[in-house]
Image (tube, rainbow, N blue to C red):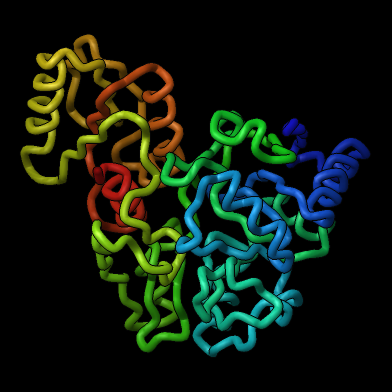
Length: 350
């Protein structure tokens, strides 16, 4: 399969070239093809969410198992009746607070949504993205678009079109290239129908922000499936056992007063073993002896938004440089740090 690359400037969508490129990609979606496109979170791989044959192409391209559900992206709330049977009061409040934006809500699936989208479960993940290209594409396509992250299953999520091409070139129809994504982490996923509401996947919209709208909301307690029987269909996107992973082995150094000392000890051990070592090294982390290790300048240690935006790009860069082992400090479990810890801990599992 030939993968078409379309370069679109998000700041110049009204140009004739921008409109033509959006319409070209939208036509591919309408006829059942696959399109990778930028959102404010990461790049997504989209197909017509109401076309089971088109949806199946996502699973084939990503090598994604059928037990992992997808998220459906809409242009606006007027499209909700085609996707869901009901919107609860909590769901409506969360939509008012955070849509368009990086929030996915699990809503009762309508009969029009193929069961493959939800892994056979009664709830479908739905969000309205804020990114101008994602919004323009959804409007032009005129169909709801199922779109997980545009990478091979289990791999590090893509924040650049180059990351998409690295995994999916020749496996999908179109890649829209519009530079780096804004947040760099996938959307927060909430089940607003539960009492209390459940945050299944933390993201840029934090648990505290969700609780400000829905007091009492809780973070999902992950249940690890049996290694013998394998996982059942997952209750939500983003709760798989191992996900977001680089090729290199990932070693995490948890927070604490001696975090930099433990970081240094792990780096020395890796260097002494002869493994090519990569470091996710934030500024102001108080570690200055990288030796021969590959160093990705992760951003300012006290700037959660910057660390989140650069996280996946850093893991992919160190992979590309040939690192066999990556040492990474874990941010504190507060604010967006909760989401970064979630991604890193899943990525480090073996």
